[in-house]
Image 1 (tube, one colour):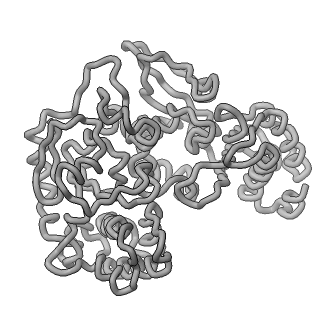
Image 2 (cartoon, rainbow, N blue to C red):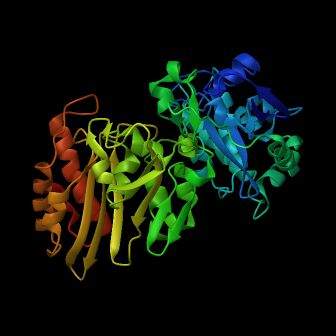
Length: 471
């Protein structure tokens, strides 16, 4: 049985564990304010808030319920638009009404839920952060300026919060219903009565982490499948530093990385990079291991960690083996992995003070879009000499690629504009892009050259930008 708290009541169900949470909410619980839109996590109409106990604290994040398996709701607090209703419009709903931020109304519940999720987060109450909270929501008829004004009003509701607990502040200020105040204790009680994690001993079970990719690709078959849930397994989560190494559990989400003090220390631009990747609710769900194992030639975090020369640990039948991430990919969507193996850990060396890192991506949309071409670089320069470099690129080959020949060419040489232009020519010999919906072969070749130049422009501002871009 799966048990969790839905809005203000505890629910239990024997429905298949792979059922999308969206379907359970609408067709089993008849909470139809949560809308069915794209079923791909793209429109945000089905957004819910997920509360869970993490290291003893109650943490809330938004999620797209169309991609969230029912099993990942086990032991948590799920909040739909109905769970935000009060006697009158709550302040978030009122802000949307006052700013005329709704027209047909289909997308409105998703926007309200996303803004309420922002109220429950610890993010600074700025207009920029409030607007970013709805980066996973699409409105087809109202226009976004009125919605942005509503988000700004929501941010103003929180300016007096300071260091107070977000849940307590939201309840005290009547931003959200009073039942939220007791939710931490209710979840603690619920977890005491549950039989731990959902287990599945079937060796042929489908492994599912956050579900953000598998539910897009296999929606009809996964809902009734035998599933081994990985998302909440403690031994597959977490980010820690041991010496100069960073160790990451494969079920770690993108948001976990964003909030990690380790990542913030060694990659101060990390949050900026992630704004190019998916959206807030997807980043809250998507796991790094899932990005790797999906084997997409344009997987953003695969490209990111290839430039860090990451290593993965695979486990099968209590036998462990380490494999450079670059060697995991042996063909299009094909991995050097046995069926019984699963991803146990990701590790990489943390950069030293002379090492710089950058990630670039070009896509047709800012949010919620896959790359035409993406690239990352880790480069160490002592004086003006490049002593070590790792360069990766996606969208230019059947697999996510390291570019070892380009890196070898750069290593040991004086950093100049001419050298960078020569390096882009070497990179062209290492790739084999194809023309598809994201661009022609010629376009992708041009993009990679420009992204390589962009790395150096960003990391070494003294370089002549104009000469590089036209070189």
